[in-house]
Length: 117
Image (cartoon, rainbow, N blue to C red; front, side, top):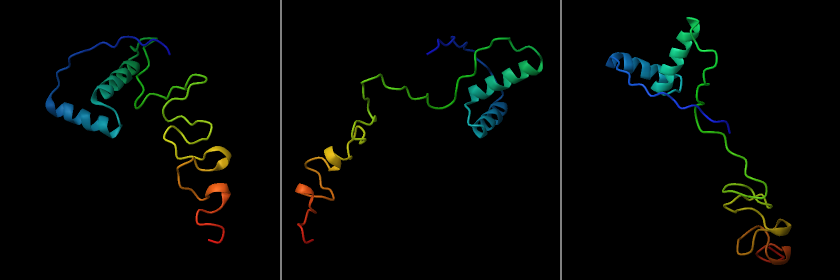
């Protein structure tokens, strides 16, 4: 993972009506008010030809991408050999439900209610 530059914190005083309009606009574009302000400032700097040549990219919105588990380690929610995942619910060896669970076959591969059911 690449090192991220420290973000500069700035106190900004705005007219309440301007902030409300900005917050509505940000919400329409699925951004926070802070992200919307940074987006608009970058766009204004670029249009004026004053955007630095190598600014850090805008932080990505939403949940960070899931990390791949290390080789040989299964984390929570990862599928094991039987494809069931960490919570179970899959098939046991030879495609049968694990012992102690009801399934569509009983012992010896017969239906649970016997051969004639």
